[in-house]
Image 1 (tube, chains in turn blue, yellow):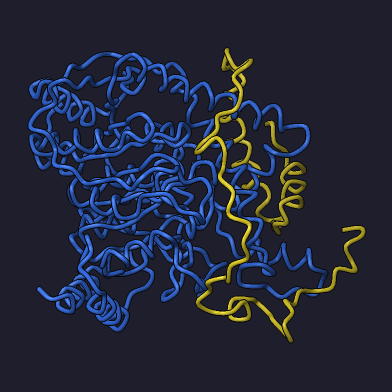
Image 2 (cartoon, chains in turn blue, brown; image 1 turned 90 degrees about the vertical axis):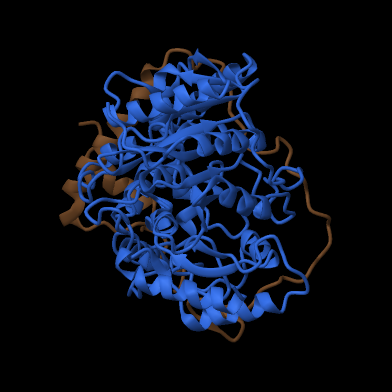
Length: 460
Length: 99
């Protein structure tokens, strides 16, 4: 198939998938221009003609980058994100910009100013979030791969809900230049794929040091590898804190099945403890809003953002612009972030959360130092929940991230792969590895993928 | 309740965020729910001496001290809310006192 044909085909699939509300910007003309650009490249790249969708908080010069927010309606960046430049250089077709929870704050993609994204298998359910648009498009077969972003599990959680692969790299593995900042010490551009190999190939292209992002590690890009035949010689840690007594029965059954498969494949499976795991969500929901409150200060109608005219002074302009431009969840997080940073509360909340983060990271260091190659856990406490089920209780929504946000706090690579279905809904299993040990983690996931029937219904 | 409507109004002012009086009760209840939830860190027993976790390279590399052209696809005027005669336009700052 020619690149032009590939572009036409993806345009047809995007049009057919319009009911998911997963896309914020695409056009046949833009796809044709992308095809012409790829055809004009001097050599075939690793992703020649492969359509890749981009979460709309990754900036591009050709299409608007709204972050799912009214405040950035129509905003077009004057530069491409580094990951976009690398995808283009490898011959990928930039297919579209995808819907998301506003500024990547949410776990269901219900907090977008442009409407909620529907789960491809059940429109009454959510695809997860905040990268729900990218996840839904990959799950629906519109694109083989997509970029999302993670601050606290926003790729692995929707990957689990939608039955696809989601990889969050180590903090510093992929440039954040051109990713609109939410929590700067946590944010990672991350990847969705229909298969482990698809996701790995895209991650390999976008990884590597970037002089425009001083938080990137000075390491060479990842090299895609063939998975080994077995897991012999691999030690897998099962953290007991991730399997509470009240864990959803379908999730537990799918995890039990995956663990049994790992043993059959020769893995040495051992029990481990991450004693501070239960504090990850409250720690995250102090640090992330605090960083968000600082990062989103720039959206004030003067530096960035659709300006709301006001009769008062410049501060009245700021308040009117931000008050009208941000949605409910973003406003809540800015307020919480400002509260925990304010005089009188800084020590009790923010400083305490920083110390808790250090303890959580130490738990992982200790587990990996004991000889464990990677950890296996459920990705989410339940399969995809129904739209509206958690929107009235922010804390209930936050707890959807209970198994995923630790890896962001500790800067670790982690990924979700589909491991079974319960009542027709996908269940994801999570692998977590030491910093910059993506290659081994992805290889193990490839072995599991080959031997697990992810479409199989599990019985508790 | 640990968070009051007065707290929310004060924090909103610090955050430069307009909040209508009508939405203050619901926002206060939500803030209180969130702050009460994260306050469980107070029960974490072993935080003394924990230090601070650093994500990414411990020492951020510095760029070469060379002035390079800014590689923008379009000029600042095209992305500014208002831009006149080479200047970004915002309301006057004169009325800051007393706000």
